[in-house]
Every structure is written in C-alpha cells, then in structure tokens.
Image 1 (tube, rainbow, N blue to C red):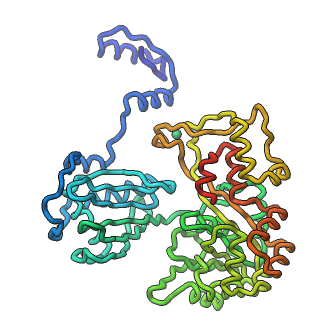
Image 2: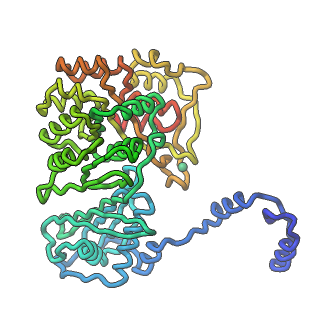
Image 3: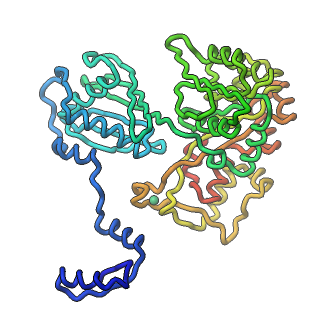
Amino acid sequence: MVATSSPTDLTIIDNIRFITNRHVELVVATAAQIAEAIDKYYNIQETSPVDALIGEMGNVDATVAEDEQSEESVIVQPDSKMITFVNQILIDAYKKGASDIHFEPGMGKEPFTIRYRVDGECYVAHRIDSSHKAAIISRLKIISDLDIAERRRPQSGKIMLRYEGRKIEYRLEVTPTVGNQEDAVLRILAASKPLSLDAMGFSSSNLAKFREILAKPYGIVLCVGPTGSGKTTSLHSALGHINTPVRKIWTAEDPVEITQRGLRQVQVHPKIGFNFADALRSFLRSDPDVIMIGEMRDPETAQIAIEASLTGHLVFSTLHTNSAPETVVRLIEMGMDPYNFSDALLGILAQRLARKLCEHCKKPYHPDREEYDELIHGYGKEWFAVHNMTDFLPELSFMKKEGCEKCGGTGYKGRIAFHELLIGTKTVKDAIKKNIGAEQLRSLAIEEGMRTLRMDGIMKVFRGITDYEQVNKVCL
Ligand SMILES: [Zn+2]
C-alpha cells in the first residue's frame, strides 16, 4: 500500500509495480502528511557536520581506564581537522540556540564533554575521545589570541565569527581545573534584532501600562532581575518602540548584544577606565532625548542617571535586584535622594524567564482541587478573588508537559517572561518619599494594580503557557 499526494498520476502506480514487481494499492494523503510520516518512521536526518567529524575522529572510548601517565603534556598544535571541528561546534551551538558552550575535559581517558546551555539549562551535546582535548583547548586559545603556553592561570578572550552574513561574537573564559586540565566556556553574543513589545509575553494590562510610561517625555524606567532574566532584551524592545528619527537615543552597554538602526550605541571598556558614568556624562553633552545605561552598578552612575531623568531626558537602566519594590529600597540604600528618585520614577519592571510548555506535545488536563488550592495559596488568597481569577469549574483546564522529539523529550520548548511592573503612581511616589520598607511598598503597589512575578506566572499557568513547577523554580 503506497500513499501518494498525486492519485491521478497513473505513471506512479505503473512505475512502482514495475520496480517492485508487486501488486500495489494507492491511498491518498497530503504531501505534508507523507513528509511527516517519512520523518517519523524512517528517521531520515541529515547527519550534522559535527557528528560526521566526530565519527572521523574515532569512537569515544566508553570503558574508562585509570590514567597511568601524568597529564603534564606538551602543547598540542591543532591540525586542520581540529580547526574545522572547533568552527563547526561554534556554528552548531549557535544554530541550536545555545547561549553558552561548555568544553569539559574528563579525568584521564574519560571522554571530553561539550555541553550547550539552551533555554537556561545545560545538556550534553557531544562527547569526544579524550585524545583530542588538548588540541581543542589550544585551538580555542589560538583563535581568541590567548597564550597557549599558559595553562595554570585563567584567561579571557573573544572570538568573532561570520556565519550566513551575521556577525557572532563569543566570549571565551579558560579556567584551569583539577588534574592539570583546562575547561573552556564560551558565551555566545549573537548580534540579534530586538523583539517587538507585543512579542515580549506581557499580560495585556502590563503591556498597556508599559506603553503608557514609554510615551512620557522624561523620567526613569528600570528593568531588574538576576543575570539571564532578559533585562537587556526588554530594554531594547522598549527602545525599539520609541526609536524614531525625531529622537536622539544614546545607549551605553557592556556588551552590546542587540543592535538597532537609529540608536547610537556605545560599548564601554571598564578595563581602560571608560565606564558607564563616563559614557553618561558624554551623552549629556551630546544633545540626548533618550539614554540607556546598561547597568547602574555604582552610586555615581545611579546618581547621574536620576539627575539626567529629572532634567528632561527619558532614561532606561537595569539593576540586579529581585523585585520591583526591593529596587526602590536598594537605590535609597545606595545613597539616592528619595525625593529626587520618586520624582524621576516612571516604572520598574522586574522580570524572570521560565520555560514554556512545548507547543507540540503539551496536554490539557483538569487539575484536582488540591492543586488548584495550591495555586490560590501561591497567588495570595486575598487577591485571587479581587483579580477575577478563574473559579474551580468543571471545565477548568491546565496544560501539562508530555515530551516529544521536538523538545528532546523534556516537555518544554522556548521561554516565557514573567513580569512585575511597579508604576510610579502618586501614591507610590509619596510612599517612597516617606522611606517606606520593601514589604509595605509591595502591598501598596499591589493595591495600585501591580501583579507580582508569582501572580503573573500563575496567570500564565491558567493560560496553559507554562506549569506551576516553572513558577516555583523562577519565583522565590
Ligand atoms: Zn514536545
């Protein structure tokens, strides 16, 4: 029995009969269904260049022998195969959406492991025979201009690569590890384009409020959260939203990860003494309308940024704080004047990235009462009703992870942001002037319409975008 998408073409049946010498029956299916079935049952996949190279380099020795000789080895010059291999790894990781590549030599003859971090979690991408470890690390050092003879001290470098017309930058850190080994970790900084505000995963009320503060002529907007919570992406989306030829927009970043036409972007170099505060001062003499400062690392930068926002400029920056209310307290502790800061404040956006349930395999289910009650408890019982959250109805349905080929069996694919947007309303500003504590400010802000990170996460569980496990993982 043969499926075809062109049942009227009689030559097909004739040819197959002739070739196979069998009786053939035709059934009709769409071309897409046929392609999918071939994919599923015959698993015809192109062997990636990396896998092919690993094949050529010899099999990974699975039986690990105790290492008899010392690892005080001579410097290995990589051959041409190794050069190609390292290049292929750099591209392979980029194509798979990795943010970091970890090169980890094993002890003795244990395989050399290469792990990729994708969507915030690491997984083993390749295992290579241990005989290649010295050559791989040497190659990485050579292309990033490091000293290949230095094997006892950490070194940092940079690799630039062009691939399909895009410039990809890799920040390399080589660290000596136990057993005379060296580990290398590469962070991938792909020159990417900003996402539109609509694509940021904002709830509709947060999106409306965020748009509103971006329409103001001056003031300060802060985006806060730990490293890797997508702060820079959010700020660039915000800048993209107001990026028109009528405004002069300056940015100081470290590193510049996203580029936008129209912005004047500056890479600061703290090593040569060119820091955020210097960039800010220079911008203020360069007729700015909007200024983005990558991070308010020190009181001096924070001070100038706040003053700039009070003198008619729209200022954006980030801080490493956990929540929006905590940010206010931190800035005052850093020595900022509560009056100045509250006058300047437009809004603070705290953010986290959680893993999204895989669109291809997630399954709807009806939660039991206990699970539902846990969510209400997490949300805050007093607010659950006020915010018109869904009652425990028979048709209530959540989504759960399943696992398929597309998500590597994990049940998650891609990420969704949780937001906590504190707006500088009159009540909030007055409270800041009175030196209110973080906990009180949080309650006050919720009364003023703020949803906490956890509330926003739970709303996204109700919408079937993620699960409660993820909310608990990213919201403390
Ligand atoms: Zn899946």
